Amino acid sequence: MSEVSKSPLAPRRFPHIPEVAGVRLAVAAAGIKHRRRNDLLLATLSQGTTAAGVFTRSSTASAPVMWCRDNIASGRARALLVNSGNANAFTGDQGMHDVRWSAGRIAKALACRPTGVLVASTGVIGEPLPVDRIDAVFPRLVGELGSASWNQAARAITTTDTFPKGAYRRCLIGDTEITIAGIAKGSGMIAPNMATMLAFVFTDARIPAAVLRSVHRAAVDRSFNCITVDSDTSTSDTSILVATGQARNAEPESMSERALKNFRQALLEVYVDLATQVVKDGEGARKFITIDVEGATSNTAARKVGLAIAESPLVKTAIAGEDANWGRIVMAVGKSQAQVDQQLLSVSMGGVLIAHRGQCVAGYTESVVDQHLKGSEIEISVNLGLGRGRARVWTCDLTHEYIRINAEYRT
Image 1 (spheres, rainbow, N blue to C red):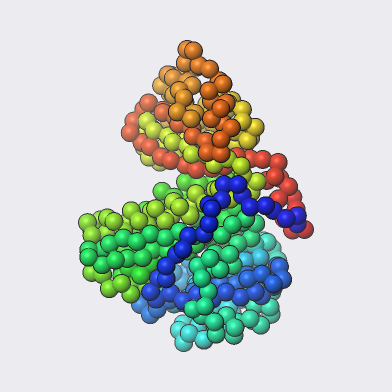
Image 2 (tube, rainbow, N blue to C red):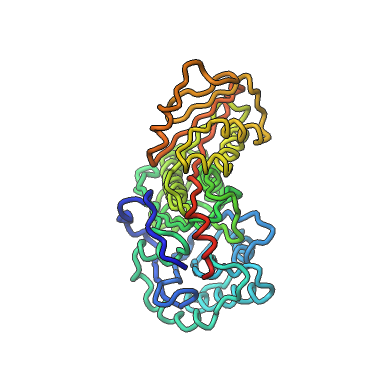
């Protein structure tokens, strides 16, 4: 595959993410797809860590996804093992055998049950996992626990990504300071049918599993479920949140507790930060697009409209070509299957009102919007005029480079 340059939308630098008490990281190069590149990540978690996860809804989910779905139901985890370069998807009984073997190897080293080891994979679909290569580096992976940085961890889980993705926030639960740190990977095959990529978030907060599930799901719905690059849902989509409990805060009994307000906001900020970084690394992306929808009959309907716009190849290619073809936005709204009355519909781009109550506004000058489209951050706003539902969705443009990257993916 030809060298892919760093996305022009990438952050200037990877954030300086602090340690999270109860988490130790290690990376290793197993040569799964590329030689001399770290492609394994092991994160060990202190005893008592609670865990929550959301996974792809794909009917062809990978073996690691099926393993995690079954085992995260306990609400506990002791380790997370991630490999890049091979998705271990559509690999039959052998694929699940390889997951059990991997979990068993880590469990033996940590003296825990295999079911306490969460596993995730990303990469080429349909190829057997090269377990012999992974087995060869397991001793070093376990022996070097605590040696890897968040930057190294984020890089180890990438595939076609052009930059590592990380984010963190600090907040209070009561009087106790809490740290939240996350890493993610994703560049293509990103569509909002759950978690839309790989995302792993770690906190030292003490939160019961049931509450953690609720908090996690709420944050996913407003972040990872609101992004799309190419409308393709991966077989491996995984989003996991773990809480080590090392901060020793007073344990909340429900998500709605006032003491959790700051934590929930900080967690959402981490998720949105990671999700938008994924969009900004969309394969071939040159423009980051924010779509705001309001006036819908519900928040769900608003998100449906936003995603219809975000997933439209006609809208995305028009923006790539810096063409203010707002009729394509109207088209996408109409196909969304949400309740729409075109006599009430309004459309704006870059803060410029283009269409209002079912028609182009008098005196509209396209040159103003053309200037906005020359920038790297594009804003689209739609008002349906029907209710109070609102949503924000993020996507990127669709360029010739996207085709090249995916045409050459396996070569």
